[in-house]
Length: 186
Image 1: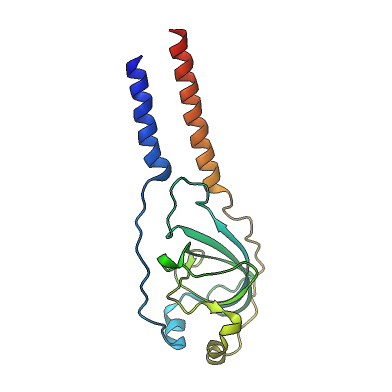
Image 2: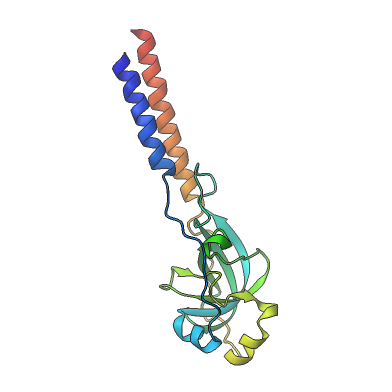
């Protein structure tokens, strides 16, 4: 019986690292804004768009970090560089302390994003800004093009971490239930 209780304690202890283990974090430090032309050359995508949805996939985890990624779905208005589709997904860190861009649902932005197509990222150190504050950038970039491809990405990847966490908790509860039930019968 002591061995079983000891085993359950070990499993709970080890499982706590699996569910909410520590993550690497670093404070944000930007060298200063780059010129529009430099940012345009260095980025994978430059577009303007409205934030349709902000999703925090790590919302229900026990440990959270300011560096946890937020998934942002944009309705694209104009494209200067990169994928030419009506919606794009861009990630950023949750907090500006970890160089995350402070994006608000419903607002329109000029976005400078890097990374591979399909895994675009932006942050505080990029030139991403509210569209209403981007007059200088827009003058240099010139007129953008309307997106060519229609896309609906609002359903992509939602609820993934909640399912993983839920399944893990159900398994843990089942193990505890059957262990204590077995102890009572002895």
